[in-house]
Amino acid sequence: MLRHAIAPTGRFTQAPNDIIRHPRLSPNARCLLLFLLSPPDTERLSFSEAAARAGIKNAAFQRAKSQLKEEGYAHEWRSQGPDGRWTTTQLVANQPLSAEQARAIRDGQATPTTVKPAVGEPRPRPVGRHPKTNTVKNTSPPPVPPTPRELIPDDLVEHATLVLASVSHTERRLRLTGRELKELAPLAADWLLRGATGRDLREELRNGLPEPVHHAASLIRDRLTRKLPEAPPIRARRPTPPRPRVAQMRECQGDHTQPLLFRPMGDEALCGGCRTERAAEAALSAPRMPVHSL
Image (cartoon, rainbow, N blue to C red; front, side, top):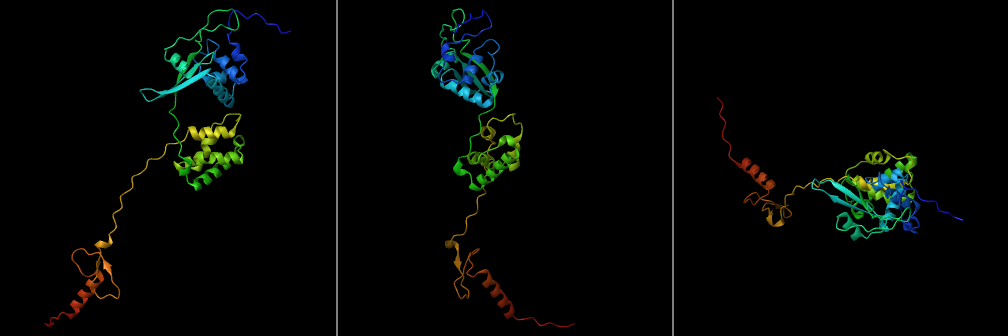
């Protein structure tokens, strides 16, 4: 027979049974939600900081947060302030909220409803401090948009595949399958397209690796996407001078076996070769002056 002990009078968290027995929430998702709902030292923690304290690793944390957002227990928004810095606002609730309800609570336009606690002595308990605005933290600007795959040359994709393969063979924590290499090669090729070298890619992927790496392909994809460099500015091309049109050319009136077109500088009727020959003939036919010896 299962018996229930009396809940303590302090240092405990009231959680709805709907959370504990939720059919679509994984154990990590329930653990993260309960950790966030436990006051008071978690009120200023971000989702990722709470997951780290709860011992939830990165890949498991991402899946848990995604489940909480899908079920309406967690919400977050990104916004850019007047100084250009980006912030992330996060909100967590002990009951599912729609996007409209979450925004209304975030903006102070709605009062959280009271929920009868499932544990401990019954007393009124609002959704918030839960839901609560968990933290507002400074974050980096949004990632640079990637180049469309059709605009990346195939030779760069092949080069990027070789770079990723070299990383996979020399770093045991970043082992990739052939399929993963093929999927990640266009992302790496986008770095090469933007001026990065193979050495830059290898250093970016190898430096500061966690221990252990739970999923090499996910880590590489995250780094290639999140740290994608800006595209170099497009240099304006110098305008090429227009080529002379055939209408501007003139046929030489000299003695040629075939018609010869040339571009006159003025009103010349002869090409440069004919004018040189005529000048030489004129010089030879001119009378010579007698030379007197002294």
